[in-house]
Image (cartoon, rainbow, N blue to C red; front, side, top):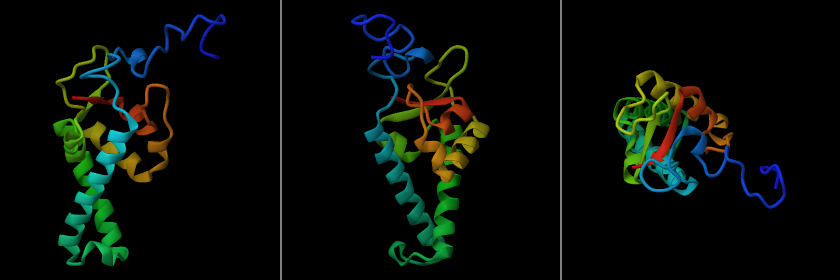
Length: 153
């Protein structure tokens, strides 16, 4: 195992569990959220954006088309940026028991990331690639750029 200095000593102090380097707990509220919840939250938010786009374009979701796809992406960006920045998470995050917290000097589970962080996260999630490139703390490039982390409620 490459994480230990000597064989049989286990993981280094720096990386014992995801979120350790950020000062987050290993389990329970405030611990880093797993991939299953994140993917489910993303799918729920994309579905909600599709319903909004369907209402705006007067087309059913299954009809598709360029105007529907653009409307769905714009709706997804807007609800993700606004809700993440001002409420600490999207509807999908709330349903799945997660929240987005800012990573600052002292980690606080009650503060909101702010609208600028929400816009940065949403823009990079819409580009997709930054969301699938992540580090040992399960923070994608979108979270690193916005200085946030997705944790359990």
